[in-house]
Structure formats: structure tokens, C-alpha cells
Amino acid sequence: MSRRRRSQNGPRSAQRFWGSLSEVEAARTITPADDPTAVVGSLGPPPLGVHSASAAHYLEAMYQKAAGVAVALAASADLLELPDTVADEAGDGSVEEP
Image 1 (cartoon, rainbow, N blue to C red):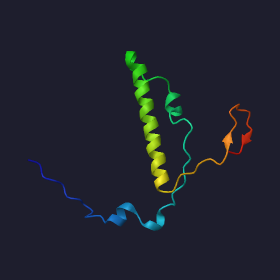
Image 2 (cartoon, rainbow, N blue to C red; image 1 turned 120 degrees about the vertical axis):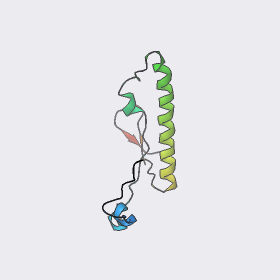
Image 3 (cartoon, one colour; image 1 turned 135 degrees about the horizontal axis):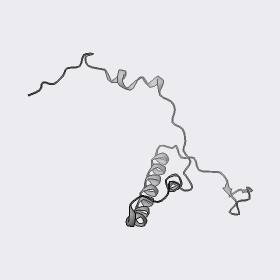
Image 4 (cartoon, rainbow, N blue to C red; image 1 turned 30 degrees about the horizontal axis):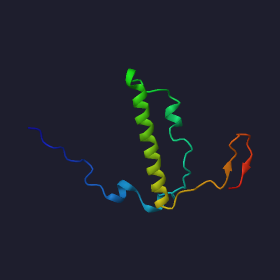
């Protein structure tokens, strides 16, 4: 039966492990993504052969759900920044006020 090793340095304090509060940055606001699946979708379909289409559907649903949870958490912490303007649907770069 092997013996458990003891730490050479002794016990560590929580402050030493996590650092001090003065070193913590202020949280930044987030803006919800227009398409949370864009980055993963750019990699192509999942390499699962005949099940690729159904897997892509479920993965997309999972990314949408994760993005929704992230937005809800940001809103609950008052870190959600919604865009003030809405881009023109024609894509010509003009911006309209809502």
C-alpha cells in the first residue's frame, strides 16, 4: 500500500492561492452575439459521417442555449450592454436609430 505524500511547502492560505482583492479587475460589460454559432460553424460540419446533419442541429441548439444563459447571467449581474442602434438590413453600412 502506498503512502500519501505530504506537501513540501506546508499548507497554503486561500489569499495566497486566489490572490488579493486589490489585484482583481473590474468586470467588463458584454454584448450578445448576433450569431453565437458563427465561429464553430466556420469550422464546417461535425465529422460524424451519416449523423453529421443531426449532430450539427443539436450542437447549434447547445450553442444557442449557452449563449442565452451567458446573456441571462450578464443581465443578472448588470453587465449586459445592448446595442443603441440597429444596423440597416440592406447591409449598406447606414445606421438607423430604433
